[in-house]
Length: 561
RNA sequence: UGGGGUGUAGCCAAGUGGUUAAGGCACGGGGUUUUGAUCCCCGGACGCCCAGGUUCGAAUCCUGGCACCCCAGCCA
Image (cartoon, rainbow, N blue to C red; front, side, top):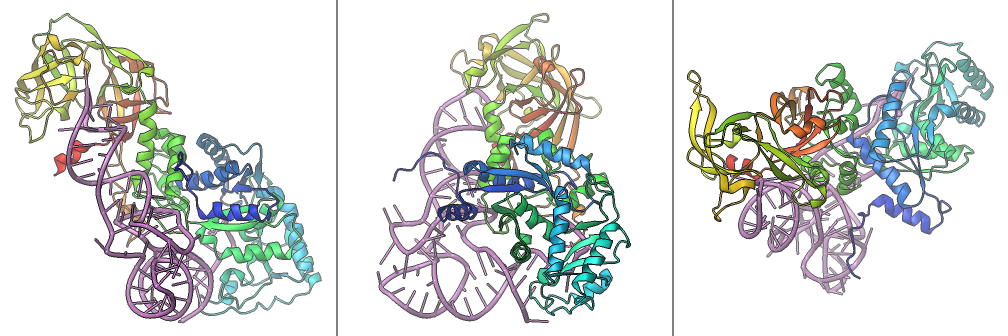
């Protein structure tokens, strides 16, 4: 067999589907669902699940529903459903109108519960939450039956109906599945399936006084939607027994099955909704879309592309291994996409003034520059050049260390697309001793940056003309945490928040063409990295760019060694 | 002292008894280069958590260990 084009890597779920299809278990159908609870914003971990569920559906010519798992009115809000829909769309997936809500099935779910009661497989328990916990036993000790476990069907029905009508207070009664208090699997010890909660729901308002719990709701929602493969994360493995119990004991329109995969863990960040909410509400970040956050809205604002995220999700694979992915994998996917599609541009973040003494005072030139060195289709642009320019402070060293081949006294470098210049004089601040200006001379024969006589220069610098440049604010982002796994270890995870996760530079200078950029436009600032015009704060009067990711930097490695 | 899972290179991950244990990221070396970028070559397990066993042959099968993750919400 001949090795062929890049194929999507296989995984255990694809194999299960292949087998099911081969055995006609699902009548040839593949129907998945992405089931977020609308109680927070989606993050990169959800992206893994979205790509898996929607990806599988499209590969197998099936369907994937977007289902909001909204059974807990205390925590869920409309704001989140809108944000979630936007994020899924942005990632590039389409639920084709199948926007589902568990809350749409409340009436059916109630009937299913009543059915269980009539079969003697569910009962109303009137113990307190504390008592129920005590009776549940422990990991090593089996539970005990509730004194209410043997109520009659009639009494249970009566009580359950009255729970619905609102005759009782929160917590007074619950409905439990009657399974096995001695089960080694704790989720089978008569799990609570309905609780009284007199809270207003974002969709059903005050219609309900009782709400079903996850284990009862999810499997039945899957069955109602004819989901074939219900894919969730590993922590639900134990719950699968209950999932199957409910499906087995009720007359459902279909018999879905649950499969579990390992959730994503990423270095130097946290991916738990609870913790992300905390970062937002405690003000450690500016909001859900603070570009340092791992949420999809933040990542997008920072300049990540949907394609890069999809590529990343494909590369990391789908297994049951508890893993932690190195940031470099994500960044590699990102750079690969950005490198191809991003126009190059020059920007000086920390400007150092350079006067070219032998360049005529009033002369100005327009020099030709490629928008992408490897893609002529992206065209060219003109760069303004004049006697006074700025270069990056980092590109000058008065006393160069070994292997530093940028500018230093007496050394010659190339200004990209412009001229060779040689540094003749260093001007310092009288008080601080800081270098504040350089005087250089240029070689007119090197126009365009070409070597007039074959002479080599080791460094090429980016620059911008003082007279023409526009000012900008640039926000430099770094990892949110200074520890690879802030979740692990002793103490508060927030103590590992990286105090240098953002640096705001307000005196940056851009080549003038950038004035016409629009919010969310992406560029490569040559030699620095990829930058994105901020979605919220950008204006042509006051440009604001976010650094999406730096370029790979082998100089940094050399310098460090 | 219960139950459910997982262990292949620094990080992911193919592999399902039989050629030198895929591939990606990271790392190191070299080449091209007007971005120390991109791109292109080359390099890494003598070994598959450990110990026994079965077999002509084991990462793959068996037995026994060990390590790590999840479960005792009226959260999902």
